[in-house]
Length: 379
Ligand code: SF4
Image 1 (tube, rainbow, N blue to C red):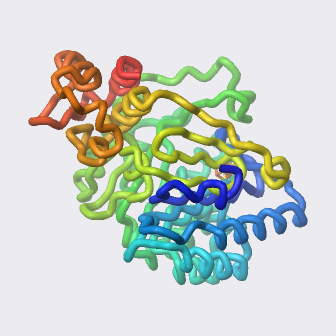
Image 2 (tube, rainbow, N blue to C red; image 1 turned 45 degrees about the vertical axis):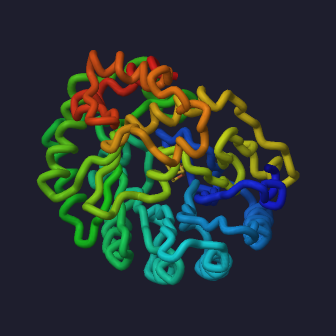
């Protein structure tokens, strides 16, 4: 798993590429990325990634349905590097019409880079987080209004165009949040919205700054989540996952595949992979990754894995059901359906706060607010 060649026996259907470089760490960010890395190390990492991609298995019938270039800040790549990376991605074994997504930070996206991205990617996800300068300052995210406006205008050049927002920052009212939602959902060409409640993660600058004084208001948090669903629906966007909204036919295929338990290969420092049975996570250090450090392996039983996936699927509006995909992969778990422990758990949970439709099990809209409890019961 430490290199693409070592992983060649798996049928990879999704690929995640991690560009773990940022100009500066945002105060709320707990994702793995590094700021202030030398140019030399950055260039070494870039060439390593290209080499690994060129060695990506092309044998057999496996084809990638999605490629996701995330970070970190992929738009910190130079235009020439994006063009080179794009030509290597285009040579991968892709299904016709594969989804190729790139995450963009408004501060580092200009017309030239957007044109380079549009030559190989069909989906752009712009990390706005907030349209309000004061809220971005609270979040410790350096970005100007002008950069956000420019990036969002460029997003309209992509067939799939998504925007990320954060809600429930300190002092934010329902009216403030409604304004943010309206601004995003009225963007020309927007097909997808992700909106996340602010979590003050340990070991972030925000946690250090707020200490124990920050007390989120659970009721306000739930109201903001409900408001996102209502406003998105009024603009023709469906909530298809707890934090994600899309126009019909514009769900993020990469994430949807991963939630349902499809295989994905994560290339890069800190990137995770799932081969259909085990999960792997590469070391969170650029230096160690380049030196060939072995990934951490999360090995659990097929049933435990299926329970995890079932919980993940309950975050989606489709829920979890009698999926031929899983029947094929874990036939033993389906041989005596009446006794299937997972189905049994769903039924007992359903009596409390879930709905089920035929053979599919879904959380109701309000039930989604109890997802944590349900997931704890299943895993
Ligand atoms: S939020 Fe994005 S841009 Fe900010 S530090 Fe994290 S990965 Fe980098």
